[in-house]
Image 1 (cartoon, rainbow, N blue to C red):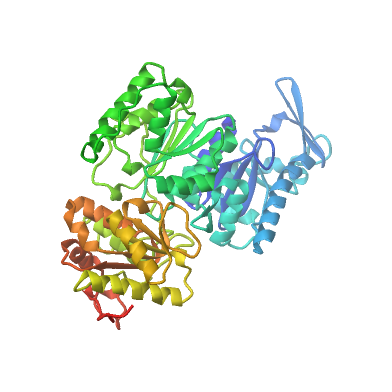
Image 2: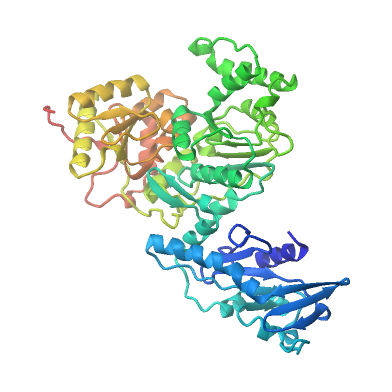
Length: 569
């Protein structure tokens, strides 16, 4: 980027509101300079920065401007300036037409940081002034940049304020990777997510944000962005569990230059390709040591001996990075080509009890990217309760901002205790039948439990009751209610979520129990039910967190005893 453009970036960053973003972008115009400003009161403003001085302007006509500097003469065609804007206007018009929506206006402007306003009206050789020559563009001079820049831009753009949806469409036109299909719905990343996706290609970046803020969607967009920018790069997307890997694989469609794996499969694949002997998988009680110490040590030794060099990647993107053991990160850093060292990690510290010392792990992300709080998934009442549960020190009345398309308000979680396991099961059946009778798609329902054997048994029990249900493997099966353990549900979401046998959480360490309940709660997009059939200190804590004012006045109190259930099914 030229010095004039860097100076302009600093000026705009200092003088414009936070919801205005200046992009460097050449994809639609085909050549620099290509700075594009997008904001709600301006629409899209392509900025052509010209460092002309008054003495260097040798000739001006209504068709071109001639500049003579250091003995060389360059000519700028005014038709060429206008032509650079046409691809942007056409792309936006196509996008608006496809969505049957109002399109974002485009107002080109020429930025002349070395010229004052009075110099625009100086007669020039060639018979025209700069103002006359640039009549088809807005013009920003030195005084505009030093004065009230926002007011001057507003004067250039006569368009009305734009909706968030129009701005999203405009940004997605510039950067198609920002348009992602997730959980069966089209999503366009917001401005803050967009900023994170387009962090510098090289180096390490760690994003820490709560559930529902779009971490996985950002990772998908970042992967597409890097592939478009660097088609020769080898890229790996790695996650903690198989379910999330399946979901990401379906969205990203791996090929010879893109691998989408869960961490354990990557370890075995790398060691096998390096010809290293892999110790047999030990008994269940020893597996933590196996994955925490043995396998990372083998990987580090393999990289040190240069036996794993062929397995290196130009970029690695880590989803659910909070679930990764600290000892895994040094191996991932070693798996990067030192020339690129492109590492992008997204995680949520609310979901784990330990903290990761990134520097100690060899991850040079400074600072960790935070500040993403807009929830695009769960209703406000669910999101607030979940975050208070995960972080009891959070202020009680701190609101959870909703994204542009997020949800506010909503139904309070339905937290109930039943007199017996059988009564709880029968209420689950009644809950399911009520929703399915209301034309709810079965695949939009997710039932969670702590233990996989319990969920396998529930699958059979529901089938016997005439409800098709399947233990999830990542993808939704049309016509089937999804079942999963809470651990396996990371990365999943559904309109209706029910947590079964929630009192079993009390058998875990308190921090682990709170974090798993947080995970279960934040899977819900519309409604959440939490059922148990035994006393639970954790669910009593959840009941205390739920503000009574969020409960409908005609409803029973939260964590109320379940209603009598008919014995017939």
